[in-house]
Image 1 (cartoon, helix red, strand yellow):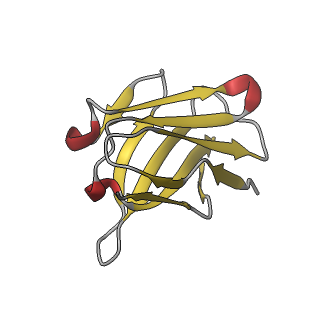
Image 2 (tube, helix red, strand yellow):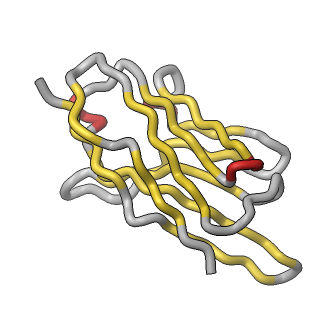
Amino acid sequence: QVQLVESGGGLVQPGGSLRLSCVASGSIVSSDVTGWYRQAPGKERELVARIVSGGFINYADSMKARFTISRDLAKNTVYLQMSSLKPEDTAVYYCNLATRSGSLYQNYWGQGTQVTVSS
């Protein structure tokens, strides 16, 4: 069982920046899919960005120019750098880890970190 712990959320003014971190209690390997999702009040959880096997990166279209996902496998940590934040970016941000070992697929979620963009 892998635990994911997010940090870095908080209150920021429009146009500001935040960096979220997600530390895994177990090893992350290059074939794992690591991603960030978010859920705003009254809305469904949506993909923000993810790194898939081979290091390819997917972004949600609305966040592609402003957010950057990265990971440090040596530190078992995934980052989300967010810039030019807008009020509509307000949400709980969740870290996700999807692993595969043979035919066993496992999916893990962090507890979430609140990001509030407001003046």
